[in-house]
Image (spheres, rainbow, N blue to C red):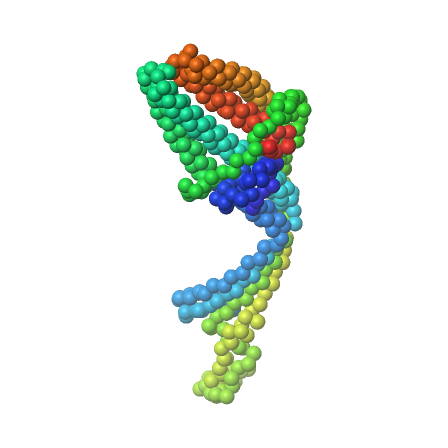
Length: 482
């Protein structure tokens, strides 16, 4: 199962990205892949599939049941022949067939309410999947932006290294010209080494950030894995647009699935009360049964074999009839044979059917049914509390997101001013150094401040972009890095 979440991520790339290799991942591709392969998402896929199976089982429970069976039986000694129901003093081999069917006519609404609850459970499971999809999407977006941030910081560090290298070359030229003392060179050499160390550290951070995203996507680590770089030069009126708390909160309540999932579970808990009450009501069931059997002792008494019959006269017996002596002759018949009844003839002759109704009325169940009702009512109360908790959590998340956005704006503004001041200070120091009015330590200090200002400005820019995208997400507009 693949769910349709409320997280839409659209990226607009420069035209130069069209020729990138297939190993380059866009944010949209990464999020889609995470929805398909992340272990949390796959686990919720299975939970939704289980809920659907329960729903299917609830629908099928409205149908009749039908079962059949057969059994062989060897009886030794004096026992009852199942075909004649008479005692026999010999071994009996018998076989019986049975086919039973039943359908529930009434059981207090248990089947109907089980079906209603199963439908609600499926909807709740699908909504839970949407919640996880949104969370995974935000995590992937955050990881993606972390990669972009570290890569931009790496580019700045490389540019700073090149700048320091150029300063070193200029200083060596000035030393050769005799404009500055030779000792000025060592501060810049130390700074160049520090810049190289920063580049190495950021290169490692980029690799680790890419690895984190690969692990989040359940991918095997691959050095060729990389992400596309969208254009993130957003205009200030976009980054600094105002948002109203109530408007964002109202939109979030409509677009975010957390509250809807809690409401579905409360509805399922309400149906659970009716399910529990069904145990206190009578149930009525219609049943039917057909059966037949076979015995190795069964005989065909309707078609005897008289071909070997003999009439035998017994010795006369003296009797007195009306006071006079006389004799009584008796005759007996031998050789009359009753053939065995065939297997299929027995099954046909012994075929029987029955049909009936079964009424079950609960009288005393050790208080189990009443306790089940009370337990279901408590579950409904807990489900209502879950809704209130979800609403409070959503409000807290929205307020925190707006607060983070405001803080990110102020930090971005401060970093912007700091970068402009550091750039101006560096330009002045660079000119003074070229004129011999400043030493290498002054130049290195101005360079370090400029580098720190750039790092902070880059960090605050990405933080502001992410905080704004979170608000866009709550508004139902998705994440649009453009």
